[in-house]
Image 1 (cartoon, rainbow, N blue to C red):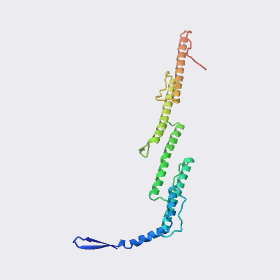
Image 2 (cartoon, rainbow, N blue to C red; image 1 turned 60 degrees about the vertical axis):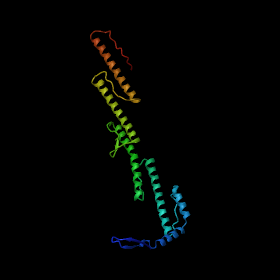
Image 3 (cartoon, one colour; image 1 turned 120 degrees about the vertical axis):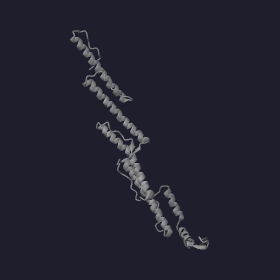
Image 4 (cartoon, rainbow, N blue to C red; image 1 turned 180 degrees about the horizontal axis):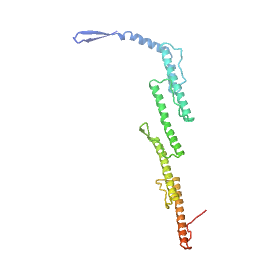
Length: 254
């Protein structure tokens, strides 16, 4: 036992006995004796194997006392890691290869960091699948003729960042260009073909590649049609006035 002498509030000397220290040395010696009884080399080898990613390693189940508790605890931990690795591999195969987006990891242990890891992995899967879901939603709408649906630029109130933002911006720009082009072609066709307003041109800004080619083709067609109609109109008026010298001069084919 250890004895400590202190003074109380009245200045008297008091003696306190630390009873918890009684027998501590004996217990410690017993624990050390038990630890030395099992094979420390085998424990070290098992720990090194687990560190290297070998979750099949196990300590013997016939160890007793403190050694048995250590072996059981080690085996529980390495088994939990093995199940976690198997679960992650399964989700990677099912979600990443087979495209089954509803699959999520489910660890046997959910307390403490185990539960946090499960939640983090599942949240990561959700975050990675979100762009795919959004692109599918937007493209499906376009396929149905709805050019007003675009990808959202935020998730749960948080703005997109990095590659997610870049992807959403590209998809939305594509839909916007398609919408503008469609609107302009429809307008020119209505003005020239239905309302008789000749000279109409599609105005699609900041386009390149196929979008630019399509715009130029529509405008060329509208210009040719305008020139032909005006030329025919001039000749018709001249003939009606008795002037038979007028001829159609526009280049027509087909």
